[in-house]
Image (cartoon, rainbow, N blue to C red; front, top):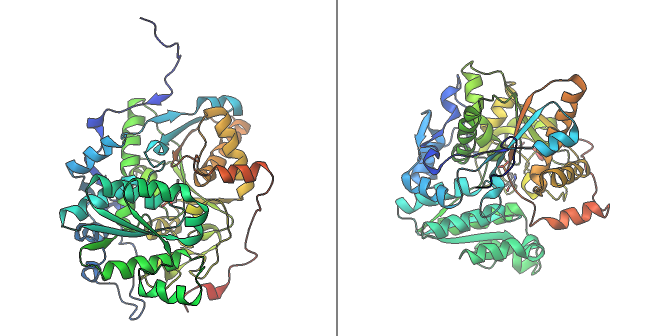
Length: 453
Ligand SMILES: *Cc1c(COP(=O)(O)O)cnc(C)c1O
């Protein structure tokens, strides 16, 4: 039999029975609790029970849990297998060679999910726990559509209805993601819509209202509390979302063990923080327990510099001031994010647990402009063959810079990053980049009145 003449494997694979059996909860390894969400009126910690009308009970339990290992239900492990988990750990050998670096570069291929990002990892868990408690319908909002399409997929798998309020400009300008959600059976409504009182009040004033993410959140919440059979789902920021994403890092740990390699640098891009946390927290747990001295690096856009230029303070989670106050690095909930192509990285704050770890010095962060980021993405596409999502391109920029630094210092470090999405539905962004039409944005200063007064 002919065998393929590959001198060294570039893919580390796991079998389906090696899909993790528990999620990893980083709260268990911290010496104090992460600052809790506060009620904006009383400034007292929010009573978790008051959230039961909005979120599934099990998700609220996970949100406040300090157990280290939280069991993954068999049904969810099966669903993970159905969508292609475990994902490969890939060595980016051609990129290494192109950069002439002594560093070794590995990535976790989360872009291989059916919707093209890591988001189904939590969508499946959220849909499952909801189906278990008898929820019939899931409601959410979506900007660019990555989260909406993941929840639509998961709702289909667990037999739930799904309603997505999609910001009207995206609904009109990005029909690809909308069609994906509808193909999975979800109902997609441009927001503001006539389906809620709030949406209707805005449409009465302006029939062509372009919508914002804040408005879409408000509509999704109003819809949830006015339909008894419905619950709301979020795709990032909250502890339970980050928890579900740890399947990524737990698999990666097993894969690195198989090849007897220890990563020195672990990196990811951050919008709300869930794919970074999912990949990094299992490794960071080792560091918190004194068993590793790896570096952790989170990458964000200079246009929305939450962790590199923002303030660590209590702020609203949304523009519409409907959520509890969250302690996080934020550029302020009134910050108007510039129209960069990385829709997933335009969020004003970041996950409270990640912000806590940045504040304590366990995680570093860096920021980049979009032109340099797309340049890095092109280099990656031309060497490794896959076209990354604009969000993912931020971490690729860091990885390439770091590999060049390794060359200059002749250091053979192991760099690992989370390849969280492909860019095949974002080719307009590449088109604009290649035509020289991308603008690099950076705020001159972060206004104090962006914040809670
Ligand atoms: C949603 C998304 C992000 C940003 O969200 P995180 O919670 O920070 O992971 C980043 N990359 C891709 C591909 C996404 O879909």
